[in-house]
Structures are given as C-alpha cells and as structure tokens.
Length: 504
Image 1: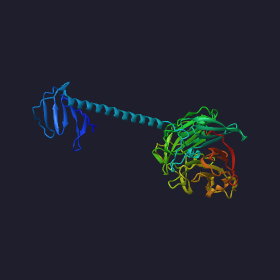
Image 2: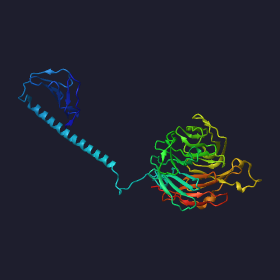
Image 3: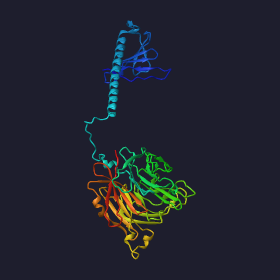
C-alpha cells in the first residue's frame, strides 16, 4: 500500500532530497520507494539494500541499508530507456502517478472545505428568516419596553414669565436614543396641546438627565434660557442650552465636555439667582469617573462684575456606584441653602445640608457639609428619586410655629420606587417632626401591573408649589403623567394631565 510522505529541502550547497512515496516492508514498517537527489542520483530502497544510480547509469553500488559505506560489485547493466533501466522507469512513473493523484485529491478536499467554510461564514452573517424559531436561555430575560427604559432619565422645568404666562418643559429619551422636549405654554387652560422638539441625537442610551432655567447674569433684560444636562456615548457630560423663545436654537454650552461621569451616574442640577445683587450659583452633581463612590459638584458662579469658570468640588462621603441623589431648596428666600438627599452604602437615605458659596476653591477641595442626618428609609441603587416641596406655614399659629422652621420652613415630599419598581413610596420631612410615611395618600394615583421608571420634581420657590412628573410603563409602552403637589398637607393628590410624548 502506497502513501504520501514528507517533502523536505535542505539549505543551499547541500544535498536536496524529496521523499516522494513509501511502501510497506515485510515487517510492517514503511520505507521510501525513491529519493531524488540534487546531484542527479536516484536512490531506491529494496529489501534492506540501497541501490544508487548515477545520471549515466554506468556505476551501480549495492549496500545494506544499515551500512554507511557501499560494497561495490560488478554488475552488467540491463538495457536502458532514456538512460534508465526499464524496472526503474516503471517505478518512477508509478510514483509520479501516485503523487499527481494525491495532489489532485488533496487539493479537491482543501478546496471543498474552504468553500464550505466560506458558505458557513456567509450564512452566519445573514439575518435569520422570520420563520426560524429562536431559543433563549432561561437566565437571560427577553427585553421588554419597561426594561429598555429602566435606567433612563427624566427632567422637567416650569416657570412663569414677566407676562404671567406659565411654561412647562419635560425632557426624556426616545427609543432611538434622541433627547426630546415636550413643551406646553399657557396661562390657564389645561387642555392646551403639547408640542415636541428634538434637542440632541448624540446621547448615551439610558442617559441621566437634569434641567434648570434662569436668566443669564441674573438679569431680566436677557431672555430666559433652558439648560439640559445629559451624558454622551463616551460618558462625557454635556450641557445643551436654548433661549425660551426659540426651542430650535439648541447649542452646547460651557459645561460640555469638562467632566466624565461614571457609567451608572445620576444627574442633579440647581440654579439660584439673586436679581437684586445680580449674582447667581449654578451647580450640577454627578458621580465622576474615578470618583464613582462619592459625588462631584460642578459649580459656576457670577456676579455683576465677574463671571467665574466652572470649578469641580468633591463631597467627602461614600455611597454605592449608581446610587441616586436629588437636590431641593430649604427655604423660599434663601436659595443658597439647599438639601442634598443621597443613599449611603447601606442604601439608607441621608440628608446633607449645605450652602452654595460664591467663593472660588481649588479643584478637588472637599466641601464640608454643615448638617447631616441619616434615616431608616431604604432606597435601592438605580431607583428613581425626586423631592418636591410644600409650604405648610399657614397651618401654624404664632404659638405653635416651630422655632426651626424660621430657617427651614418648607416640607420635603420624597418620592422613590419600591425594590421591584411596581409602586411608588412617599415620605414627608419637616424640621420639627422629621420623617413620616404618606404613601396611602398617593394610592389613588398608582396603577396595578405597572413599572415606575423615572421621576422628576419641579419646585417653584416663589409660590411654594410643586409638581411631580412620573414616567411609568403599564405594559404598553412608557407614559408620563403630571401630578400636582397639594397646596397643604392633608389635601388630595391629583393627576393634572398626561404629557404628550414621542418615544418612537
């Protein structure tokens, strides 16, 4: 039985040998039939003997295969054909035939295998037909509408202009990851239709959102501007700004690109303006890349003489990455004093009271918090959180008015989602009685079999009135409702309207 054998080529100036084929010896071993030498010799193996033919065929040496030196004998050569004996020529022709057939078969096998690999690769790159059933592993949940928007942000604005016209803006991300604005402008009629604008296309899927509105340089002579904060695909934090009288003139502003947020950060923003002194403080809070277990504050300040650059401040406390946080005012008049709500590493809600300062500090300086208090409220990471305000000072008399309320008169209404996101929880805080549960008050507004996705609070410090925007999915796709904060404690909660949106 013949088979193909290894082919090797030695270095130049040495003998080159090509082992063409083998045959079985009587003991079962394989031996090469012939060796073609670079010196023009043809060497064959036969029964343990090596027979050497030169080009001319005049000299023949026969010696045992185990010997290194040949034993010369006088042998009369048989007639030759083209210089070779007939037997040798037949053997060589047979060997060449085997080599040619082997090459053809090998090439055909390799070629057909390559074609199959190419066809397989092409078939994998083509989309599967719609009739093909797909099996999904049990531990990998199928995507749902609620799952798509679980980590998305929601932001809202509300202001009354100098003509006493009320304006509302709601910001969210659609299914194509575009940043959308739903806008409403009217003084009295609740049925006025909303219209929808596109703010930006370069937005990270599931981006956090925050929004503030104010007058540049704390000067009424400028048109009010809207600032919206979000994150790009590279985790850079951006600021989009547009004047309130032109919702198509969105552009990037100075905060854009200064910071990189952690992959799961929330955003919170607060803008305080003193029109008498023409001073202002604008802060944006986030978990920064490289400082994701704390909170970084980007801060911009200006007055009638100086406009300062953005400064980064670090808060010296620890929380889980992806923990939620929110800002809200403490008093109507003193807008510099604010309350920061966070969830610590044990998921317990904490309060941090501090004053926004106009002083410029070096980047990286740890900002001390003037007052901290821990609660027993558990807020899960990635849970939506929003704080609305309520002014209950009219419920007290001069004798019963709490002393602490002189500096902290507002009641905080704290909204967050349950662990399974199937219901909302409402807790109230004021400086005299602390925290109390008010979830039963919003039970009429909650819906069964619904996933609550995001929350945003709007606080009008001038009037003390607030609004909560609730983004939820009843199983048919996300929706946004506006809940009006009751004027006083004990008054009923109502759904003011459904926001016209475009999530497609």
